[in-house]
Length: 325
Image (cartoon, rainbow, N blue to C red):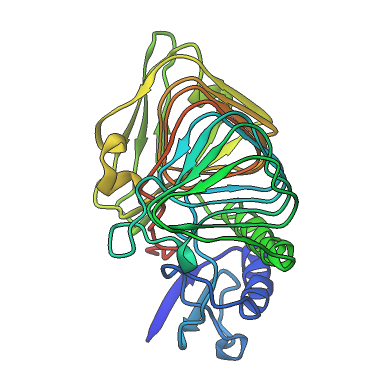
């Protein structure tokens, strides 16, 4: 099968490097992320930006659907995660629950039956790992963890290596997404308060760019998405911080069948404060996130002060991006 992708030069270089890196990863994918490209399949073409790629056999890889929550450093939580979580630092805070909607034959089955992985220590009040899923931890168990439904609790010295590979994968993904060429339009309120409207191009994958201060401005009353036939929605958001205190996501964005194909990529954010319900997956690998209400989708952040629930569905959209040109 031959697929045509439109990549700029920096994206192509990153993609080739990432392909080689991902090919070495363990077979831990829960769901397909992408069809990896064999570098030998590249052929000379007339245009530097138009590349034909022959997609070979699928190679197991990490996926944005493998975990509901990934935190590179510490997680402080007094809430719950419907799917599984992988924490690269310590797990702190009061009572928290994980894998509350996991099911071996359901819509989300945790990888290898593990609902919670923590590279560091587990501290604070009791934690709950549910539906027969297990716990893996690398540090010290300083809190009670109840594995409800018969799940196992295992201390693992190899967990840090697995996490480092996952983190590398996600950072490489971020570097790819930020270089994608925008093909869709955003309309923002001008003088009067109104809606921020994302109008997809109708290409299989719609790619947007917006600044955080435009997305969450004082004029934003609601955030809307018009898919116009596009399947996957990638929204690159610039800015080092975002404080979302007013307005709501509405319409298609609050439909599970749509939001599981939406990814918000805050590629340079260092602080995020979300006081309203956030719909669609969030990739913010350099950000400290604090939430007060629910987050709907795969969440990837540097550190997390969790004060609201993290919900399914995880991201299942198509990556890398197939463009019409």
